[in-house]
Image (tube, rainbow, N blue to C red; front, side):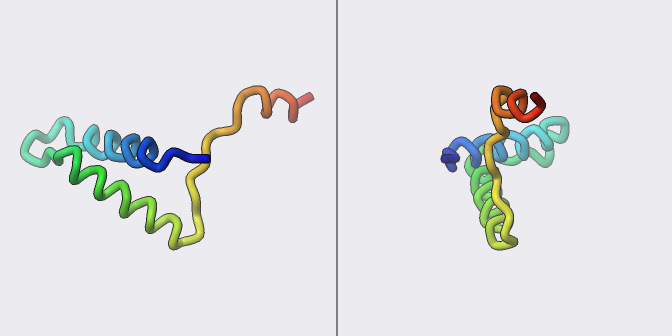
Length: 64
């Protein structure tokens, strides 16, 4: 199961990092989280979903 709060926080952090070098265009954390939620909703509406990366154990078993 995916922790939606964590997913939104990760996306929001990435959004804020994109604006880091442009102080005149910085975005606050709450606005970035709101944008992140919209992104996740848009992906879901398009039939896509974000899922955790499979663990290394699962991929090493597949390669055997």
